[in-house]
Each structure stands twice: as structure tokens, then as C-alpha cells.
Length: 346
Image 1 (tube, rainbow, N blue to C red):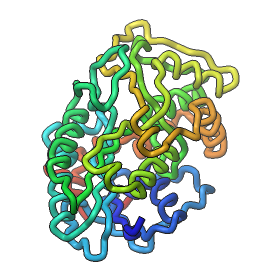
Image 2: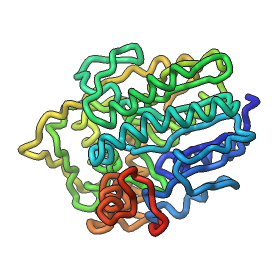
Image 3: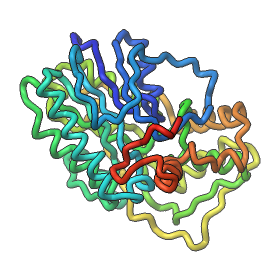
């Protein structure tokens, strides 16, 4: 793989902190761009992760200097349904239009590869049946639609000189210095830890594919290092395990001694349900998950113990993407285009 100089957007985020470290340890020169929306929450200080030598605090919409860059790994954007629901118009702007514009600028500057962090949310409402990258997308939220529209626009830019690869990440879990509790396994283990109850707010029947952030990072690295013919214009679902939310709750319960599962008696069926076949990425990139959800749940439990997580700290806004964005909007730390102003310090 000749492309050694990588621009990574969102490298200071939940996944980005782990992915940037892996790329750096694998010999890549990583330059990072991160707007700093989601703050420093002081989690997992002992992880000893490497940081890029070049780190820019800026919105990726403003980045134009691709000189010397061989590849772009684009992680930045509104990261989940809660955050996107706060401003669906800007979710489409950031996650789709601005993403395509970034790729257009990269292509014009001679960048060779563009790897996009999409989401299995594009599968949306697909019930219990096993689906794959060839299945018809059925997003049901602004976030899911924004990721699908970005994929569609990016893939039109793919050609012999510009290799586009879209990575549909399953719902992530795992420990990061930019920890988030709005991911299902992270959330359920945290509830079990601080309250002794694994709180299932829906009826628990929806299917979710889940994947550790370290496995996601490996998958992106494999996509970058693969021959272009393997990944050119391709969409890969990234993961390895599918569970119902009820089954994920059982994994969380098993990881936290003395905890119990509590279902919401008014819990409704979640229309977001997708059971994903990961055969394509396994065959094309020789990818399989090293982390099981059971192992990940134990990792989370130990990290919560080390941090001293309690009911109060569990609810801190910095751990929740939607809650943090609500705070930024309410306090006018972002404008109507969601540009962060200089008075906010992460």
C-alpha cells in the first residue's frame, strides 16, 4: 500500500481516537481534523493512545489543503439518531452534502482514496430477515437517510483515479477516551453498573448488529490497504454479530454481578430492526471480529469501575452526542449552520 499520508476527520471522537492510534501504530502518517463538538470527558486516561503530529481544530467543511494527502478517512458528522433529530436539515447538510463536497475537493486535489464511515442505520426497517449490502435500504430516521444519501453521492465520484469505499458500521461498543453511553451495549452495561438494572426501554425485539470500535478500526485499515480493485466503489457492512436488544441486555446482565433486567412496561416495538449478513467483508477483506460482545461487556464493566462511574457522571452531557449537541445549541455555542464558535472550549 503506497498511500501512507492519511487525513482523518473526526479523529478526536469516540471511534476516531481508537482508529487514529491503530493507523499510527501501523506506520501511517495521520493528520487529524476535529471540530471539537463533543468535548473531553476524561474517560479511560490510562489507554496511552498515540496522537497525530498534525491536529487541526476545525470544521471539515472548511478544509481545503489536501497537499501530500493520499487518502481521506471520513468519520466526522452528526453521529446518531438523537443528534440528527435535533436538526434534520443540518444532518443532511453535514452527513451528506458536506461529505460529498469534501470528497469532491479531495478528488480535485489528487487524493487517491476516500473511505466513508456510513452506518447500518441505512438498512432501517428490515425486521427479522437476514439482509446484506445487496438488500434494498430502508432508513427510517434523518440520520439513516443522511448516510444513505452520502453513499449515493460518493459512489458517483468513484473512478480509476479516485477509489471510494463506504463502510456501513454496525452499532459500536467498547471503551474510548471519548466515551459515549448512547450505544446500546455501552448503555445497558452502564445502567447495570450504576443502578443494578439493565434498562430496556423498547420491547426488546428489534435486531441490532454490534461491533467493537477496535474491530471497526481494523476493518477501515484493511479497506485502506486492500487492492483498489477489491474496494473500488464498494459498500461493506462492518460487523460480525447480530442480536435482539433483549439478547444484548442478557450479555450486559452477565457482565455486571448482581444486576437484573428491567423492561419498560410501556415499551414499544422499535421500527429500526436489521439483521445483517457480514459475508462480503469477510471474503473481500479477510475481516472477522476479534472482540465478542461478551468480552466487550466485561471490558466496559472494568472501565466503569476504574472511572468510578455513578448515576450523576453517567448522565453528563459529554457522554451523550444528542445531549451535548442540545447543550451547544441552547447556549449558542453553535450557529444555525452548526458551526462551533470560538467561545466553546472542549
